[in-house]
Image (cartoon, rainbow, N blue to C red):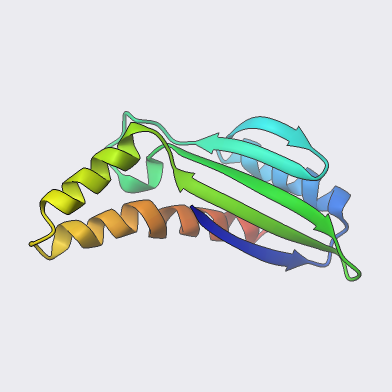
Length: 120
């Protein structure tokens, strides 16, 4: 699971509203939303590109003195994660499959969240 955090100068209520708007506009499915936590799902199994693999994640919004702190967690979910790991292990003696596996399971989900949080 990929985790991280970002600080924002906005109050938690505004951060929550902006995150919900960004998630809705980015084709995310919001599974649960409360003022301090948003759980979401993104992607599909019927894809041929790694950035669109199914992912699950969570944002936690905490108030701070200067604004708010956004903690996030994201991971590739379901069968796709295990299939990609299996292929990476099976072809570990080659150079490119482990690199592709790392990019699909770590780089692309982290890039998705980084791009999303640029607006907050």
